[in-house]
Image (cartoon, protein in one colour):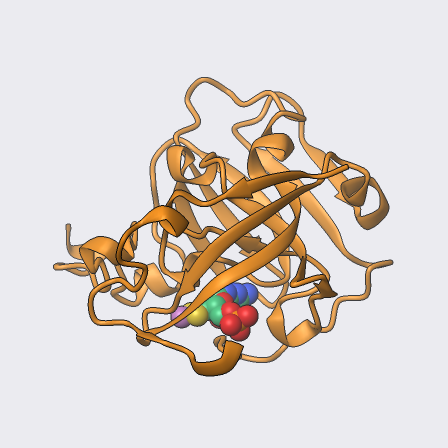
Length: 205
Ligand SMILES: Nc1nc2c(c(=O)[nH]1)N[C@H]1C(S)=C(S)[C@@H](COP(=O)(O)O)O[C@H]1N2
Ligand SMILES: [Mo]
C-alpha cells in the first residue's frame, strides 16, 4: 500500500503564486529544452554517485520495488502557468536516499537526465517530504513527453527543478548551477518568492 502525502502548499489559502496563472480544465503543457527522450523501461536506470559511500545503480524493476508513495501537489512553471492538484505516484526522494549512505560533506545534488539536462538542488530541498520520483500522474503512466518512465517532481520549487527522464543523482559538496541555472535562472527557484532569475549570473558571483 502506498503512503499518501499532501504537499504543504496544498493547504495555503492562496494556491497560485505571484505572477502565475492557472491552466484551465486540467490542461498540462509540455515543456522542455531539446528533444523528447524515449527511454524504454528495460533501458532506464538511475545511478547515484559523487559523495556517497558506495555508488549505486537501480534498474527500473529494482527502482519500482522501492516503497511507494502518492503525493498531491501543485506544479508551477517559471513561464507563468500553474497546474494545481496533481496526484503523483512513485518513490520518495527520501526513500531513495535512505538506500544510500551519503558522505557527511554532501550538501547538494546535481540531478542528471537522459539527453543531458541537469538541475541542482540543496539537499534540504531534495529531501522535502513531498519530493517524488514519479511514474504516474492521476493514475496514468507518464508518457515520454512528460518525462516517463521516471521523472523527478519537486513541488515547492519552479518546475524546471522537476527533471524529466531522470538518469542520475550526483551528490556534491557545494551547490552548483545546472542547465537553466547556468543560463541565468535562480539557483533555488522558490515560486512564492518569485525566484525566477538570478540577480547576477552565477558565474559572476
Ligand atoms: N530533462 C528535462 N527535464 C525538464 C525540462 C527539460 O528541459 N529537460 N524542463 C523543465 C521545465 S522548465 C518544466 S516547466 C517542466 C515541464 O514538465 P511537463 O512538460 O511535464 O509539463 O519540466 C522540467 N523538466
Ligand atoms: Mo518551466
